[in-house]
Structure formats: C-alpha cells, structure tokens
Length: 122
Image (cartoon, rainbow, N blue to C red; front, side):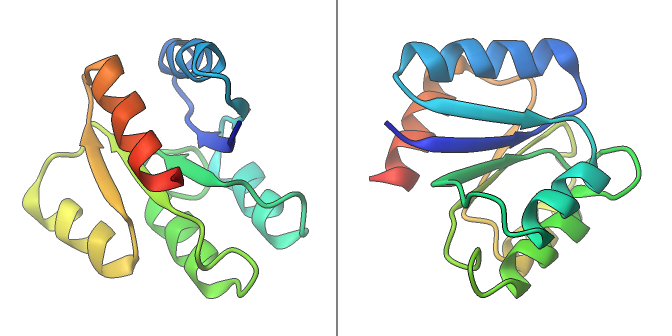
C-alpha cells in the first residue's frame, strides 16, 4: 500500500483519482491548492511515496510546488507525476526539467494512470 499525495483543485478529478487509488489499495491524501501543498512539504508532514500534481492551482502553481519538492532534501526523491490539461510542449519540457518523473494529460485513462503510478512506486 502506497501513500499518495494528490494536489488537485478540481473536485471531480480528485474524487475519480481517490476512488481509483483506494480500489488499488493505496492511501491517498488530497489537497486542493498550492498554498496547502507548500505547507504540507515545508512543515515536514508525512512524506508520501508519490505525488500526483496538477499545474493550474490556486495561490501557488504546480511548477512552484514541483521546485519546492525537489529542493527539499527529505522529499527530493519522491516520484512526481504531473496530471494536467496543459499539453503545450513548453509546459511538458519545463516539468521534466524541474524534476517531474512523468506527465499525464487530462482527460486521462484511469487504468493508464494506475499503471503509471504502479511503475513509479515499485
């Protein structure tokens, strides 16, 4: 059972991912904005086995969260999968340059997301 942090402001997407991950036997914690995600990383709360991260978030965007995670020695090796509707090449390249492990575009196939998560946490 993996611990997954989902950073997603769209409640429908959050529920879909939460249900999928729970069915796969994982524990998932969801935060709905970048400010809360930043606090989660900075305050030394429990480190997840994987982060699913949207780019477009209230207060602090996903690129900033990605950079924050990679700059934190305790979090730097946590796999990060970007889960976003931003499909422009510049966003994909920037995410990988900042340290993302994978990039999934919305709308997404649920089973594909599950397999990609499984690949990152094994």
